[in-house]
Amino acid sequence: MEEIRRAWWKEAAVYQIYPRSFCDSNGDGVGDLNGIISKLDYLQNLGADALWLNPIYESPNVDNGYDISDYRAILAEFGTMADFERLLDEVHRRGMRLIMDLVVNHTSDRHEWFIASRADRAGPMRDFYIWKDPAPGGGPPNNWGGCFGGSAWTYDGGTGQYYLHLFTPEQPDLNWENPAVRDAVFDMMDFWFKKGIDGFRMDVISLISKAGYADGPLRPDGLYGDYTPQCANGPRVHEYLREMNRRVLSRYDCLTVGENAAVTPELACQYAGFDSHELNMVFQFELMDVDGGESRKWLRNYSWRLTDIKRVMTRWQTLLDGRAWNALFWGNHDQPRPVSRFGDDSTEENRVRSAKMLALCLYLMQGTPYIYQGEELGMTNRRFESIDEINDVYTRNAYREQTGRLGVSAEEMLRAVNYISREHARTPMHWDAGPNAGFTAGRPWIPLNPNYTRINAASQVDDPNSVYNFYRRLLALRRSSGALLYGHYELLLPESEEIYAYLRRLNGEEILVVCNFTARSAPFMLPEGWDGAGLLLSNYETPPSGGVLRPFEAAALGR
Image 1 (cartoon, helix red, strand yellow):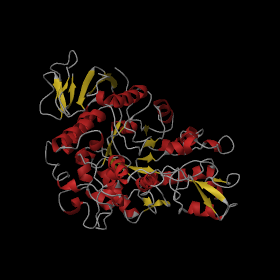
Image 2 (cartoon, helix red, strand yellow):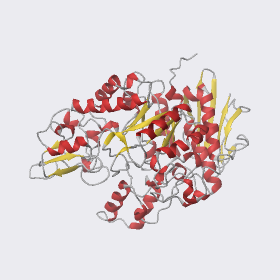
Image 3 (cartoon, one colour):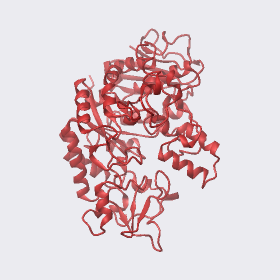
Image 4 (cartoon, one colour):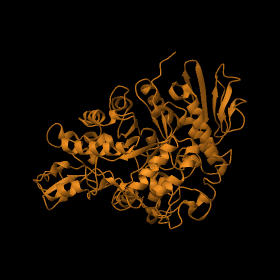
């Protein structure tokens, strides 16, 4: 018998909550902690083992909570610390766990640390952030561009230096070279663990070590202003994470997952190797880039091939097997809706069928599933008619730059927004067909998707054929099988552009997963020896037969 290194976070299914858009309890149009509490039975019934909350800390909300001004306070829109403690108690009472978002590459420019740092060039807080003199002749220290547009440097006239912000100017980067910064971050993390939380998702954690601070002066210009080679997976990032693990994480039975820019399977085994003493797992974005949605974000010529998806996932499944752990996701708060991107929302039948197919295909691989709110209902992208309907700073800045400086037509840019903008994921959750989808009694902070009258939780919870109940059965199946939790992965039909098929094997148990990614029937013969295998789960009522897979058919068979 093969030895298994079990851990609760390997066997868990994580449900991601974007609090602002989940459920509003007080009618102000913004989701809140008490709204989440009111839906915990729904999440428990789904089969969620852990809930990951996007940031709920005090914030000016320039980047919807990823600009934190106080790490130890709850944003008043979301509730109070007492509300948070009640949420934590209610989550634990239901046998679930709570994961917080950790944002420590940067803070808000309104954080007391930055206010003090900016106030005095010779003060003790100056080195909490990254300050540099202007380039010879004036101007920013180098040509790095910010992730959301513009320069990554902002000049401070009061002290005559530039500060670094890889995101918006309101999100200055912390200087992790300073031991006092690490002390403050680790103490803050311990504060939340002592409250009883069960782990952290770590925002852009691979950016915390900038190359220039470990080996001399800041590096020169990046190619076309790209900071990634000098900031992603920097020279001391593993040292910092091992220190974090030693001083904080190793003291708790917790889940840790890093959002890691430019990560490869080899790097993932450093960040999340079973014996690396850093993180439990990382989010990789190669899958999110098969259509150019990451590296070519606004180029407007999106397309993907199934062979590219298979190539990416097979590489991660095989290279991490026995060495590190995968995190599995089709979408999150920074991505459009999966069924609109990788499935087919053109008809109701195709939407339901392809939403189920996508779930079965990915979440039966080795790794921890991360299900983004509304995915379990098959929620779709919303069609935006104007940029004025968009709240997201990233999308708005890109639209202005593309239509202004680069001369892209408004029509063409809006087509890109309707495909790839992260705004799609942030539209409110669909609870029922009533006013505002049951999300709020007030005016929603962001417009709803009008199809909520057709796609909502109330219509699906008691429908045995719904996407929601398919997710319930899928998560229960995954939890019941050693082969699905820990088994090895073997790709079949690597050249097919229609069918994704693979095996999972462990200690004599074998499971075959077959998925048709098209809206038409596709030829498929069961592998030798699989005729008569037991049907474990399917999005059709009968198992595959007749030498074909039906449109968007997905099935798991066991023997």
